[in-house]
Amino acid sequence: MSAPLDTVFAALADPTRRTILMMLLEDDMAVTDVAEPFEMSLAAISKHLGILTRAGLISQEKRGRVKWCKLEPDALRAASVWMQSFGQFDQIDLDAFERFLEGELRPD
Amino acid sequence: MSAPLDTVFAALADPTRRTILMMLLEDDMAVTDVAEPFEMSLAAISKHLGILTRAGLISQEKRGRVKWCKLEPDALRAASVWMQSFGQFDQIDLDAFERFLEGELRPD
DNA sequence: AAAAACGTCAACCGTTTGGTTGAATATGGC
DNA sequence: GCCATATTCAACCAAACGGTTGACGTTTTT
Image (cartoon, rainbow over all chains, first blue to last red; front, side):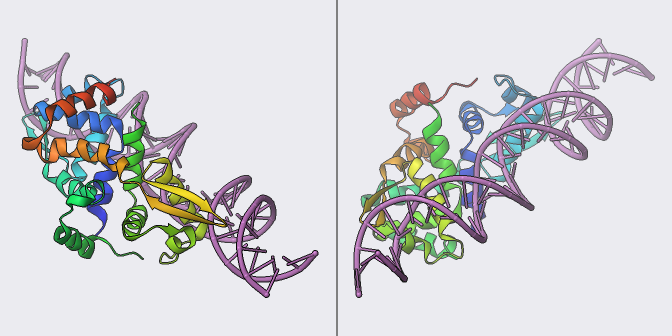
C-alpha cells in the first residue's frame, strides 16, 4: 500500500494545510477558530481539515456542537523516516530503510 | 516564499517520483535507464524528472546525448527539518523552527 | 418555540496533474 | 551523409484540486 505516504505528502504540499498544522501545534482548536485567520470560506477550511484527517495528520472529535481538531504527529514519522533516508544519508538506519523498501516500494 | 516546501512536498507526493529518487540513491542514471522499469512512456518519466528537478530534489547534466540524473539530498533537508518539528516534537530545535516560521509562514 | 452558532454536503467552476501520442531536436556511430 | 539513439516539445485528455455558494442537519441559547 503506497497510499499513506502519498496522502501525507500531498496533504503537506498545501501551504494552508501546513499553516493549520502549525496552529494546532500550540493547542487543539475548533473548526471555526481554525478558519478565522484565513481569507477563505469555512467550507474550504473544512475540506482542508478533511484532507489532513484522511492523511492521519490530525484527528477530529465532536463534543457538543463543536468539533475539535488535534494534531497527530505519528503520521509524520513515517514520512520523516522516509526523508531522512535521503537528507541524512550518512546517518541512515539501513534496517529501517530496507523494511520501508519491502513494504512501500514496488517499482511497477 | 512558500514555493520550496510546496514544490518539494508535491514532488514527493507521487509514488513514481519517490521510486525514482530511491533508484537514484544507488547511482546516477540516464533518463532512458530511469524510465526502463516503469510501464509508462519516456515522455511521462521526462516530465516527472522535470518536476523533481524544479523541486531541487535532483539535478540533470547533459553529457553528449545522454542526460544524467543525480540525487540532490539538500533540498530534502528543509522539508525534513519542517517535519521533525512535528514528528519529534520533544527533540525540536526551537531556534531553527522560529527561523522557519519567520521565513516561510505568513498565515493570510 | 425560535433563533443563533457550528459544521458539512452538493453542485458548480477554473486550473493543475499525470498520462498519452506524434513530431521535433540533438548527438553519436557507421 | 545516413540512420539509430536519447530526450524533449506540443497538443490533447480525463481526473483531481482548491475554491465558491447555498441549502441542510445539529446543538445551544434565549
